[in-house]
Image (cartoon, rainbow, N blue to C red; front, side):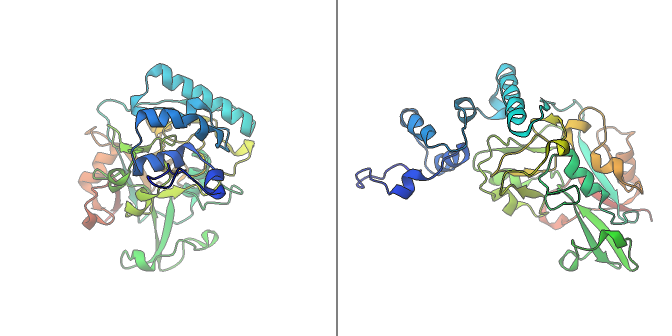
Length: 324
């Protein structure tokens, strides 16, 4: 709801007064026109009265993730766990897992070995609690597997909707595309409320309680690596992965943009991303590029490495390579 402008007498239409308000719609208005602290405090009570999602005062006033004290964060995690239990019938274990020292994650994928089975995309939606009608629904998957004609990489003619039951097909090769965890990430630069940023281990993350759903980050990403929740995520209790992290795979609300985090709830604890573990051909390599003895470092130093859309200058941490 917009504040009255000078000269309008403070009048509003019935439609304007009845418009539903969420914390995100409020932040959108705040990003467009900064409100004074006193005015915001005075307006808080009627604004909350219009809230149709039963948003608590604590949730409305929650600070940005990077400003939270450990005690404040613990209260938020407890609240999110309780809300999930009440609305979904299952109580998750939501943790805050910070980056490891001397760690910078990178991913490499052997294009010659990928057979286009999409097992990685299915594992991604299960691990990251992505919205779906069934386990076969991968519309929200962070991973798009592209089928292309052998002879060269041509994204314009690639097919994302091929029949995965008939792969690999003669004369075709397959190229999974997901978040590239860019060193020069354009998505973080366009966010008007700084809801997305890059962490010390190179992972680009989102504070989903701070995201206002403007989708500027989606427009800025050259890899189509972000997904917008147009509706309340569809998940039955048996589809929910209860092992969650605040900045990765916890259940996201309607109206926010989400993305791959290299399964930080796993990788920051020494495990592999879910997509790597299910790959039947061993096409995926993941590790710490600051470790000179890591497999990912060996790949980057000894294989023919290709960077997707290198000309846009994003400097990805996701690489493609060939055996020969």
